[in-house]
Each structure stands twice: as structure tokens, then as C-alpha cells.
Length: 302
Image (tube, rainbow, N blue to C red; front, side, top):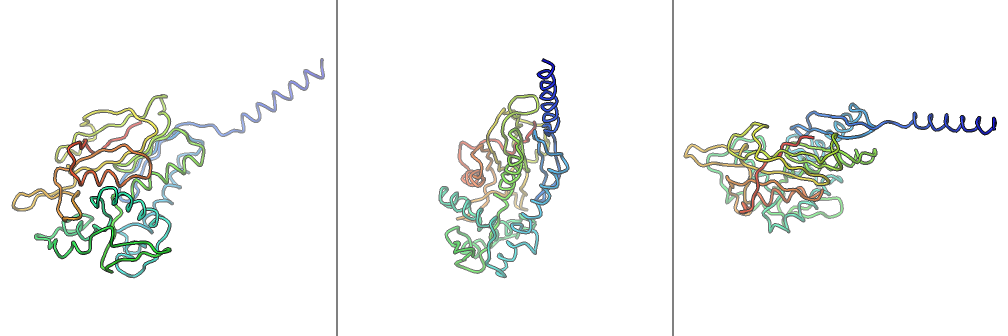
């Protein structure tokens, strides 16, 4: 009996030791700036917040060196200038993803729109008073580029690519995968208007997403049209109620447009929940100016 009691004590001590050695999980919040905008992560994880932040910053640097149109030294900037045709894994993945959405939307989504975007005064450029759209349109069209091996082949060397519509959602996926590799099953990751959630929030319920009311110059994060409770989805948004300007003759010029015609769509607005990795679909539906369009941008809150 004494021996059995002794063995029981040892077993209990061993179990306590194992339990004590296991890292505890708890919800952490990580916030900051990536890709020129804000990000927020709420996750139940064993990782400390500063380690998650370090991982995100490393991804941010990797993405900027690869896909940024604002970094003159990025691989994409060199490709756009005709200084290189080599592609890395990030660019290959996103070109293929964009191509599938372009085909699905009959060209309403197109990553070759960079000259149009700049001519209309977006992507950090000053708009032209009278853009010569006819001279730009020959350089626009997803069918005018293709991948051969690890090289980008352009029908015209002046064609330029812009991944701003898909890049934030792609990075959301990369962050979510990092969290999942480290055992997280409950999280919400947002970068600007793109996000992905899984599991439950800290209170054990679904994640609460605030949908902003889309009227011109609504910069408030409190003017919400509704709050949606969601889980296990990705979502992205596109809207023209913040990124627009008026011409001297009173025309509204907005960021969404129809690539094949080179024109702006001033009233486009969409919020779209979808499966992960389909980040371009919201942009193409916004460009269509479809009658079912929903309010944009989503303000995500745990």
C-alpha cells in the first residue's frame, strides 16, 4: 500500500510538471502599420505579442521588396521599368490569382491598370487634367502578360502591374497562416479593409464586424450601418466614398473603374465575404457597379 501510494504521488507530480511546462494560451492584441496602412490582430495563441509583431514586420519587409509600387527598389518596380523580368513566389502567386479573377469577370478586374490609376491621380500620383486614355488603353489588358517559367512576358514592354487591390488581402492570408502554424485556432486579422477570422472571440462568441455607412467623406469609425457576427470567413472591401476627388467642372473621379474603357466609376461600393485567397473578386464587382452592391468598408472589432 505504501509503495502504491508512493507511485501515485510520483505520477501526480509528473502530471503537474507536464501541465506546468505547457505554454498557456491567451488572447493578445497586436497593432501597427504595414504596406502603408494599419493592421490589427486579435488571437488566442501561445506566442507573445512582441513575437507576433516581429513576424509581421518581417513579412511587411518581404512584401515591400517584392510587390510595392511605391518602393523604387522593389522587384515589381524594376519589372515595371523594364529592368527585370524575373518573378519571385509572391508575384507568381498573385499574378495567377489575379488572372483567374480577370477571366471570371471578363476583364473588369485587371492588374495591368497602373498607367490608368496614375493618369487619374491615384497611387501617389497627381492626376492629369485631361488624361489621354486612348494612348493608355493599348497598355492595359490581363491577356497581354503571361508567365513562362519564372519570367514575366509582356506583349508590350511598357505594360505595368499594380497589386494594391490584392496585396493587403494576400498579406492577411500570410499572417493567418503564421498564426495557424503556431497552433492558433481563434483569431481576427485585418489590414485596412481586408480581413480574415476563425473560431471565436475572447467572449466565446462570433467575431463582430462593423460595416461603415458609405457616404462621401465618412472618415468616422463609429458611423456604422450594421454590425455583422461572423466566423471562419475572409472578407474584403472596395468603396469610393473616401478615395475620390472632384474636377474643376464638378465631375467626381474615384479609385474604382472599368479597365477596358479606362473610366472611373464614382458610385461603386462593395463589401464581400468570401473564401481565402479570392481577394480580387471584390474589386472586380465594385468595378462592375452591380446593382447588388453593399456598403464598404468594414471596421473590424473583436
